[in-house]
Length: 147
Image 1: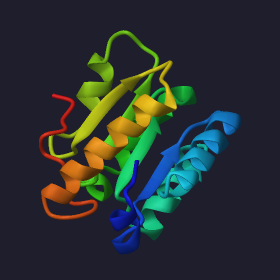
Image 2: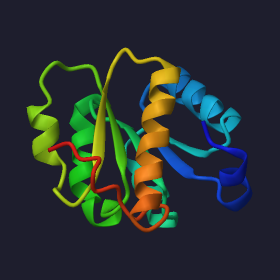
Image 3: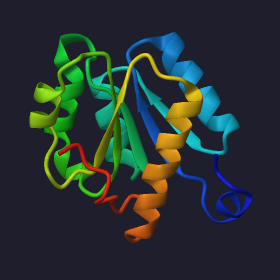
């Protein structure tokens, strides 16, 4: 998880985009306990509002929100996401539609549902470490790509 030295210098901000309120609240509580600053969005409008307000170190998104909103979100705000790593949560076997939606400049990692918080935590740490190594929070993790 986040180390003490990381917490002293920077609390990574993560936007959690998940339509299931219980799961969204659970993820945000878990992230807060792990030392992250978590902001929640339950739909595309809320996510866009958050992305208009501030920059995030990472976006954690359920790409299969109702009415394909997860994919629509990625397409509609790609300029706001450039350089911001994403962790894509999905329960589908094929990622072709998801991969086609992610601009090449947006670093991302896929996590299949169901997932464990332990495993998700390891992925978040790796993506954020890659982002810091490539120039700081929210500046990209070029080695973490969906391609």
